Image (cartoon, rainbow, N blue to C red; front, side, top):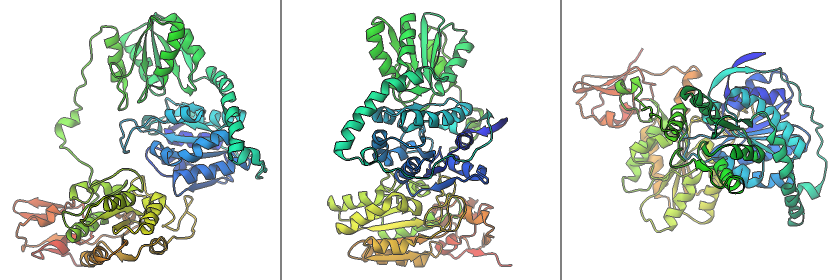
Length: 594
């Protein structure tokens, strides 16, 4: 059966066809749609699906299911693997029960990420096989194969789709899902499941001993393909393999081509290519993972080989596309370089920097925060929608998920005497901010922490979390109280405010600022997009003739406020939060009654 599918949906289809019993993940673009597609597609299949509180927990939950005999998958984006690195590295030693697939979506060019790291390095580091799909069909096929490979070698397997694979759409051959065939029983085996040093040492040797057989298996997998033609060769990995194929056709070049989709690198195929060619271009996104292997193997096989790759021909940053690969081949062959022209729309559209939505409560929270703490205060922030408020002067740092509180503590203990007000979202706090708050309380840091609670994981598509009281599958569950949690973790003062009540929010921040210890402000107002989807009817506001043209409302930064000549105007983007009416010194913005 053929279906037109998003890459992430194709992965979800593959998981269902493989009969998984559990899928756990944490939302992060470009991986989020995998879990969401599973929820939509699972029907009556006995499958547990969850949004875990973070990626480390998601991988550990998946490991537990695997050890119980159920095929399992854990989903995350590349920076999420940093969070899950602790269990990821040791799982390679302890092995699996049923198949375990770690789906880690990379984001070259960091379209929606704070860096563009290459997760193939993690698979190398852990000695875990990695499958690198080039399109949605390969993503689906590799998903099924990866779970089979995991069981064959008693090892977790990584699937590494990139943004252009996860978010591409294509016709995909699929079959129906099938129920999990797991035994549902954990077999005690401390020598294999307990990572004591006395157990880990022989398990490490066992892991190393598996590697030749894994390499032999992947040599013949359908995603490592060698075509020998002319004396010039190309090695291309993942989606770059498609670019290389098309570029060779466009330029009418009779080059040999090795496409690599499985790691460890297919050394036998690489050696065959090295023996055949006199020069070679290696095309891969981000790190020179294959290129390093080629350089080592060429020293044994063809020392005089001219190898072209990173820096000079292929960049070590950003994502590749057809033109980049085509021009690399053109330079290599002395052909004319094709210039990259501007997109037609780029000539017409003004710059559009990321901004908070009209009526977003985070804007009001930051406005009140800045009014109370002042320009000299330090504002460590975090990963989420609220990071887009950097132009408001309340985002001074942003490192990684949950780091804002710990960085705030470090700034205080580093000697900073000004006020310090950290900020992070509700989902981010539950993901990895709790330990930072506990640490701040334990070490007596005098800082204020603001939890911007919009009751969802908004940046990645409005997924639920433990503070929402709803699971990934829509079931009602326990709803965690952020107030009770903050107090339990040691905050001496906890204030709950409504950002749309500007005066009340400023009063809450004043009490937090003046508290001689660790204080927490929870600014709670549902995400405006989620509220509108839920049927909320916005209030209407308009600007009266009393407007004096002071522009204070425009400086607030809401896209729903603009200037029409010498006076302000509320446009149709308004969501009715009413904050602009509270900041207008002339009281010229009024709610429309009736």
